[in-house]
Image (cartoon, rainbow over all chains, first blue to last red; front, side, top):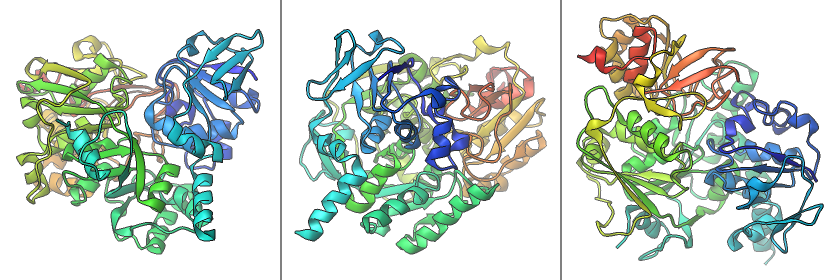
Length: 161
Length: 412
């Protein structure tokens, strides 16, 4: 699906502005990236990929930032690097955050497919952009759909065993 | 040979030593939440899991983002927090007592050697007490509340060594804006940043908190300062010494001379846009704001008062003090009166305008100078507003001069 390419240091105040934090995720998602891409929330389609440069998600611990992107159907976040807190939040929500050293080469609107097995992004012409695999200790959690689902599974196992 | 960060993580992981880069599971000594990312988010998830808080005595809840309440949504959020602490059996609840990062140590919840998490990005503030403390999101907080544990990649340490002594009119905020300008928003590489040197040891506790607080803007996971007599005096109890071994390997070691540092100002829309105050003398803000965990503690109010004594603000000057105890102390010693006489308008206790969550926000095209931590686009209100970050000294001097002003000119 198509990519939406952003710059460096895209912060959580821009991804999900503070004044909407009092609402639920449906409302917050309508304003996702509003200060920099006012039409993003309306135009984005499920399966699209957001690509950024360095330090994607700088700033707040507000989990609504990756949650809004996930709510809009974003399939993966790709960046040269992520802010640590945002990275943890994304994976905890089951939203793949992929560190891709060549993220800067990806063009806005480029159609990309994520191949998790080979750890590459592939465009229509077959060009590949490798990404660092999700750390092994987090793989099962991401696979389960995030930390909440992962805990649910663990607790269920405990009660049934 | 271990750094302070390694020692703290090793203790929490119940290991004799840990190596940077390895993944460990740590036992959490303390989990702090506020009204926004706390009860209203974790309560439904706990209910879905049918789980209870692992140890209510280790949880602290503080309302600060949506107080004072101003509409139905904010009232609902605060009501959830108040009800939930009762249901969950959490006694450590501070309601409208100030900002979480300031109230937590003020009420004696932090000790050197602890391993703590906070549901807020400015949680590295706790590192000023030689505790490993960092920010996490709501779902990760749920994980902590259910298991009492969290995973961590053992951090490398980047040492920021400040020799000499800060000159009058220059503060921890200036040190921090300087560092962020120099190293960028990701200069901390999500590792531990340790502040050291004679100038750091000379800082009072609340100034150390300002420094560690904005490790978030420097991109570190936590900011740390070794415990010493200053820590002990603030906590008013005997504390253990927690410090790095002198020969422990570092990822980076940067040395600066604090005595030559000038007041710093960060231009919109990033704390990394910081330069010496002289570069901004042409800027004429309409609003001066003294607020936030990083800019309105007692020590910050005193800095502002030092400049504002017998002077009047030429612009709208707003003050949102960081804690109830600090307000009381400021009132008793006369600091509050100086601010009032200078024309300051006081907002309620809490995060105020800083994160744009509350009833007050900056309007369209407003230019403000602020003691807060972040000036990202639209954070404090309208996307068209322009926020300059500076120390309480510089914000106060600017309020008096009507343009960005070096506070040292007014302190002579």
